[in-house]
View 1 (cartoon, rainbow, N blue to C red):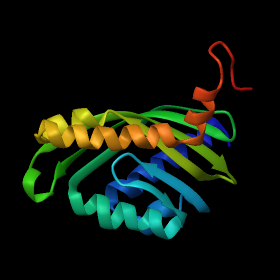
View 2: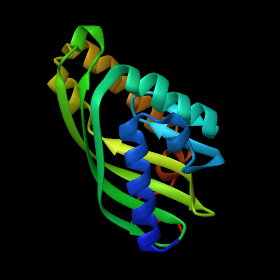
View 3: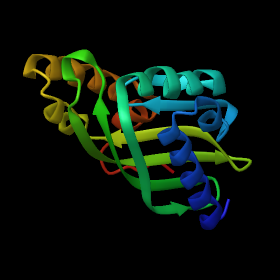
View 4: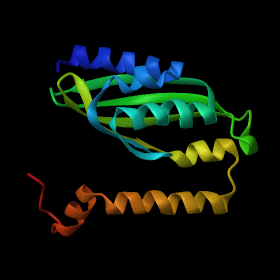
Length: 166
């Protein structure tokens, strides 16, 4: 995939996300894709990805915006920085406006996304919502567990300092 094609893919992806159109959003992914969301966890396949976007995210967020900046792509791997914002519809945080930034990693195959990972400082979002510190700590422990259990993290930690993954 060229950089221009990747930029167009991201534009279409984020517009589908903003619209809350789960099927259109999931259409940007391969049949066996994995979407790793920092709130809702991993979702595999188009049906799960569509449901995550439409039934979970848009259930909890209104006025959603998502824009990607500075996309780079080497053919089968892409990255982009993003800003996103929403108004919470979760009853205990209803009406709270949140803005966050993040980095996204895309594994690409056949012009579609085969794997999506994001790195977002969710603490910034939770602070804007007014989440209690004890609850934040619980979420941070869960995220820490996810990071530590990833195969890439385990491989990294098993290698001696100074060595590099080739």
